Image 1 (cartoon, rainbow, N blue to C red):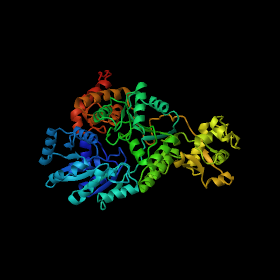
Image 2: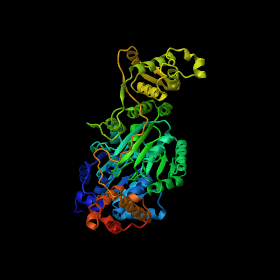
Image 3: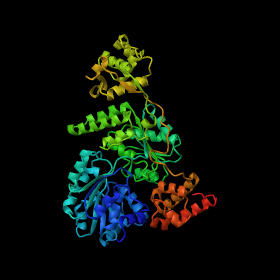
Image 4: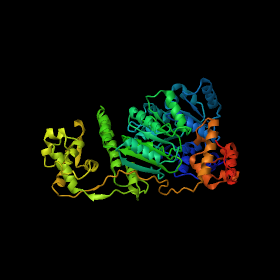
Length: 605
């Protein structure tokens, strides 16, 4: 190939420049060097091996964990004129033979396969005498037992470095802490690989955390603040809750559907396809839904329940705003979720694994309870830093009021002590507020010195104080005894008046959704034109049998609706419009743009 990677980027994919450090990664891989890449979801990982595949002789073998993900990426590549196919169990016998024939004929640029298919003896034998451009291992954290999504079938991929010592290998993931990174490097034999950590910040995502009170009402209020039809994902802890929330959303007039591993394969496929094609607004799902989603225009992710670790939270929220446009991630944080998650972890038998998982859960709780910039907390977990507050999270947008809570904290700690350190938070709050019920009277707790000393404050406020005392280490929960509150040694100084304590007042209001995040100012688009272009995109996508974002992303349509090009040269200047797509779709999009400029109402899609 005579063109350079920059020219390929523009001609094939329609982008004018690389993001850091894409160009350096691509040049190293083209030169035949191994590479290990950690890059946030939506950061452009795929281009790091797709462009080298077009510059090196032979076929690039791409390892991908899910059939649906392979199909989306192949559809997108084919829409850009790239010779790509996937080889998996979803193919008919005739299609499978056709793909293998293309592989042997050398007419493929990229072939996507599952790890177990690639590492089968029969498939490895096929590859022995073929020209292979490179191996790309996507979602590489699946190879590590310390990763949040370990998959045993990925472990065998470590043989590739021995079987094909001269073929460059690139491993890519969006989420990996230092221990997971080292494990990936060792298991895949990448000790000599160049390692790139491309930054974890996604400034277009607004991180919001609010205390869970009436979660469905909070969810419905959040959804009512969105633009009509905006797609999003709601993650819930259990299959039962997924079903309940989805049903209630449908009853509320929202196009929603459940997705979890307990559904039939056909039903899951139908839900995913409808979501990909913008025919479904909300998918309510367990973590079974996610890795296979390559949809670029997801505008929000809601966690109805607390994730078990920051890696999962980061990856799941990263499914929003892959097109770079503003998106939101809302976490409904309930203290009961912590006890449930800890209980599930404690039921495990591997003590070392339990220790790691409890550490990760505590870090997740720390993020949710933070009263400082959430982005700084999130990035800090991955070893990155931000030297200023982000201005695009709930803490930055609406800083909590701080107040001297020494006296209130002493009351709460004293009450825990007076009830014998044998009760949970709900009972302690009842005693503080002077509740008159049978349980308190039968226990004699209505005669304690702390009974009723906090009746001037709401139960919510007392709950917030006690949660912060737990988070700050003055109280601990004995999970073996149904979340009983107990004093720690740190409580002594506070009870004796030897120190002061400043806490944050709880906030129950929802932070208003603002559509522009830090350093992310959109060009003003004509909303009517955008919707007309969106309708055309949907029709073309349906005709081609692909998701709408495969035709053009929302970001590309937004730029079209802002720049309003009226000729081929102007359309080609829009980011995301390559030469192949210009030839395939240009005429119809230009017709809509020209008619709109002339004041002609767009035809209904």
